[in-house]
Length: 84
Length: 214
Image 1: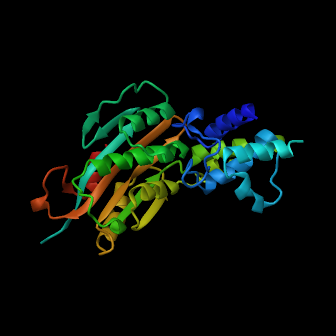
Image 2: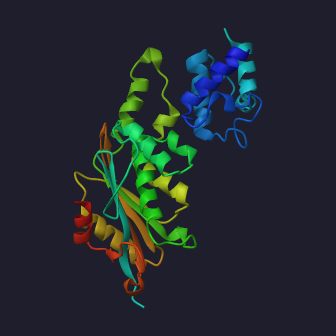
Image 3: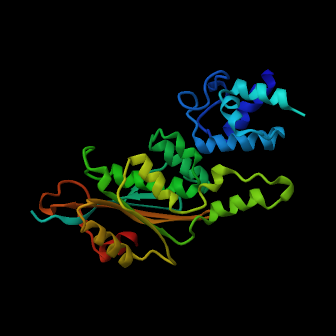
């Protein structure tokens, strides 16, 4: 799990162009949107692409996205639960 | 009191060199490629605007050029930002980002179009980025033309500045095609030239725009 968290941190920094952020700056339990990393709607779309491109997981029901992308930890939990 | 359209500041960025109001600005480590140069300039200007890193090079160049003309004029913070217009033009539209977008969709087996790239496949998003950063909500327009047309830009801005809804305008030419790039931006303000104070303060005429551009 900790490896996956570190991998996700690196992928998020690269995919979302968060050049001023270091992996250690990202708290796995902090919200990704709003007060946490302050991501926006385009970033949300990029996270959906990231899941599909790097982890082969397609979100089937868009209503689930809010819970999946609540934090880095919730993303990792979702990947583990849905990895084929 | 007669208010005249006045160019209060201008800047040029080309070949990793920056001029503001005619003065060359020293840039730390400018012997780098265009992308690295933009980041160096951003850091040197202490902008503290993380969204900068999400932009394509065209928008980065536009944001930096706009910052130069806005920082280097005599405006106080208390002006009406809903009356600031933005009129820009270029030759290559958003070609660089268009190419990057195509790379993400050309292979059907590796088909992952990036939303963050796709949103920059229109040149007028530069205007949006400048407007968001500075909270300018006035009129705006983006034009694509073969070369910078000072006569056209002067006419368009002059008509807008005759309206009571526009007191200021950020205008210019922002072009990027690979490592070839050029930015020329100027800030126009309706003001009493007899009480102009510090700054460039020159009449807004097509001839003057050409002179500053060349």
